Image 1: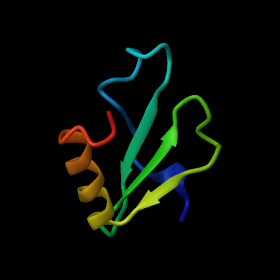
Image 2 (image 1 turned 120 degrees about the horizontal axis):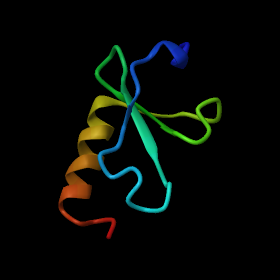
Image 3 (image 1 turned 180 degrees about the vertical axis):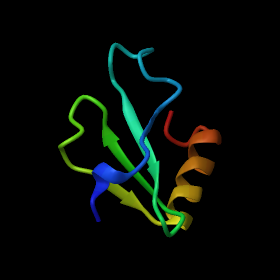
Image 4 (image 1 turned 180 degrees about the horizontal axis):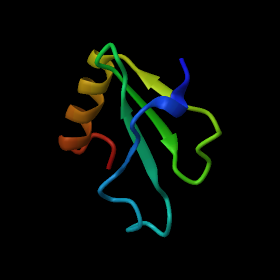
Length: 65
């Protein structure tokens, strides 16, 4: 998949941590792709829809604090 064609959006928390920014794009199958906004040509993490839901539920519950 050509990730350059995805519609990337920055995290709403970007810029609040001294430039530690991530971008997220929705994949055609409902999953998500995540990359470092400072290195858009670098590696991309891909999550299935169920993995992304589990991750966001964990974030909201404070599991990663």
